[in-house]
Image (cartoon, rainbow, N blue to C red; front, top):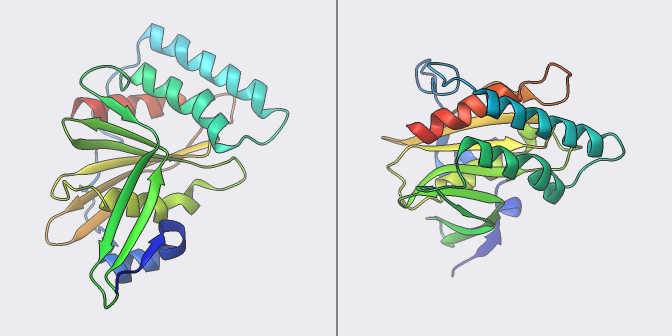
Length: 209
């Protein structure tokens, strides 16, 4: 019998990923250096674009909590544009259906929709999961990691980004003998001295790899 369930029902926490999908967080210090070493500079025009994103976000954020669609509209897509992910050789797929098969007694099939998928030559460069402001970015980790593991090019390294608008978190997933991942620190858009420039630097670096 084949059991088909949604990713939110199948993967509720990181323990589910470890037990059902044999995924673990690496203990190697050099596993994920792409988020904090040899990052490209931010140009003056990019700084202007970042300032515009910040002002728009603050304006809309000040009156209410923002849902996923609004976070994508105000922050995610403008940021991807500045980083160059909306132009060749990259392509945007949103939303993108994914399927992950667990070889258990029922041969469980997990299905879900990725908010935003950046593709380059059939390689998943970046998987973006957006959440509303009231949900911490860490809550999306089980879901986005499951999506990243569903990539058909499972031998490749895949990068991900989670954001709720207020905060950003980057991930790296790699399969050698088994699936392993690691995380960056969180970056915040909320303070006056926000960290959106660092987020852009990481995005540019991932796009250049």
